[in-house]
Length: 65
Image (tube, rainbow, N blue to C red):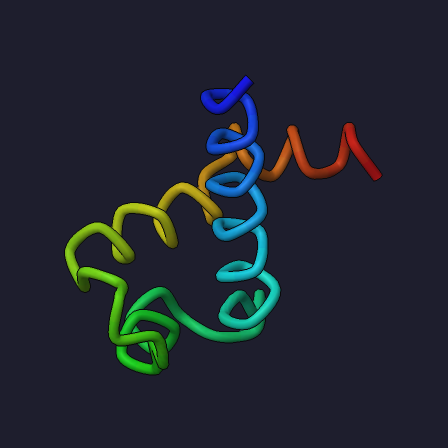
């Protein structure tokens, strides 16, 4: 039970990061340099932003619309 709640909070937090930071009109560098949350490690955020721009994530996003 606790594990599923933690998993849901983690997914929600990543979704909030994307909602606040993702802009398809900006470059990866622009998005990474504008991270506003001090809890976010820049290297990990860069990997996450790279994932958002990946073909796999784009297909997945289109699927769930």
